Length: 115
Image 1 (cartoon, rainbow, N blue to C red):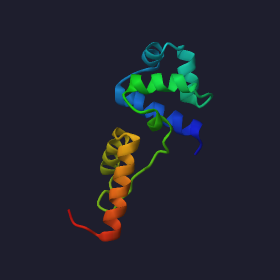
Image 2 (cartoon, rainbow, N blue to C red):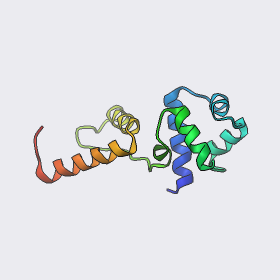
Image 3 (cartoon, one colour):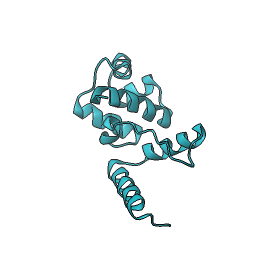
Image 4 (cartoon, rainbow, N blue to C red):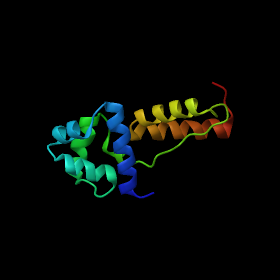
């Protein structure tokens, strides 16, 4: 998946999480509703300065808007509700904390440490 598609999907997610519709986001970042519509359809990507404004408005990091979406399927988290919960927690993390979680998972998997 490319950066534009990642941005489109993540923008939709973070707008839902923030409870913002297209008109509200457009007003918050001083852009037109048609611009937001283009971003959500994958027709275009905003400039980096606008990306920072979007992240600020949505309460996330700019990296989060371009991160590849990770769907977590873990034994013991096999039902859809648990998978959604894991993904919701993942999306709440900023880029630095996502790296920490992945490092911890790697350490646990390699050493089988019980916490």
